[in-house]
Image 1: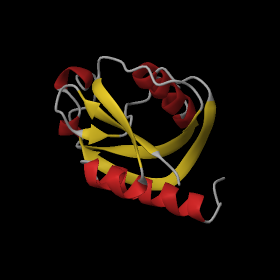
Image 2: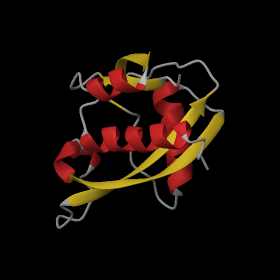
Image 3: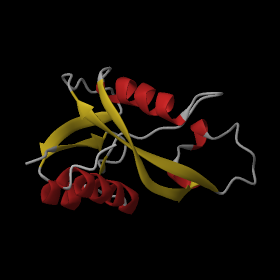
Image 4: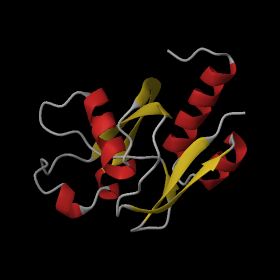
Length: 132
C-alpha cells in the first residue's frame, strides 16, 4: 500500500503538499526539485509530473512574496509534481511536522482541493502502474 507524505504549515497549521513558486528562468521541474529540497531536505528520488493544474488567488501567497508581481495579477497557476522519496525528510521552518499516511487518511488531512486532486491522480496512476 502506498504512503503519501503531507506537511503541516507552521504559519497556518494547514496540512498540504510542498508548494512554492518558480524563480526567474527556472523550469517547472527545477522549481519542484528546489522547493522539495528547501522544504523537506530531499535531493534524490524520482519526480513525476502530474496533469493536475489549478489556479489560486494571489492572496494565498504572503504579500511580502508578491510585491514584485504586476498589480493586475489576480490568480497564479499551481502545477503538480509527485516524487518518490528516497531520502530522510528534514523539515524547514515552513512546516512543523509531516506524516506518512495511506491514501484515505492523506485525503482527509489535506486542506486544499488542488492537493486532493493531485493526490487522487497520483493514487490512480500508482494503482494501475501508469506512473510516467
